[in-house]
Image (tube, rainbow, N blue to C red; front, side, top):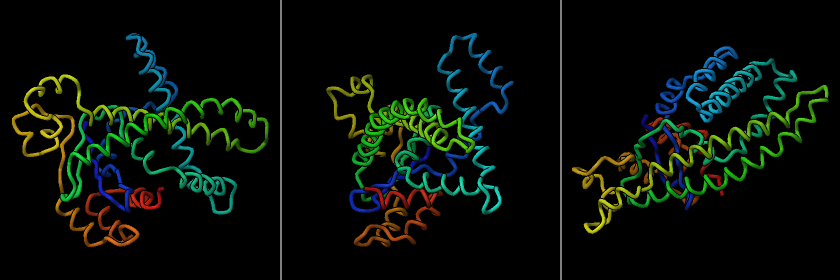
Length: 275
């Protein structure tokens, strides 16, 4: 599976890292998530024959995630002023605090084996790949820590089940546990994709710097295909140049970039206001 990433500076040292809508849709279509307990049991029973604990865990987590998404959709359709509608509004306010880097890392599933990286032509491809490695490495550390922290909070928030009201703290912590776990998986997969492996380094030893070869799209011809492809874009560079301001890219420019490269505007705008 291939993911199409778009990377560009959005405000000072703040860079935007986002995946195109087409890639997200193809990942959604390719996922085979069981919809009922019967389907889940069949999938677990099939995986058990191969002693695949990780596959069973993935199936259970995907099943729970699917149920949470359906429950969230029901809250969204609730009549205005109802309790469900108010819970949905509270959920939106909480979700607005989720960092865009977490959303990006969650969008990188384990099935992705190659990334196409589009970036402004004025930037050095080596720098772009280094920034991707940095966000992946930092994400693997941060989300591992927060994942374990969220897991420890689950038993504590479960005590609120005795109240006659919906246990919002428990479901929020449950969602954050799932979110950090997915972001951790995405971080590790992305880091593996954009990092040189030892075999490639050995093959290039004594000739030239492998990183320079891989970061130059023209010089990669004739070499073994890496799991990343760097695609400098003149169109992206022109859009950025036309919308540059003292406080970063303007809102209309960000909107134009999202339309041109099929990005989710709400997620991209978050990067501008991230510290």
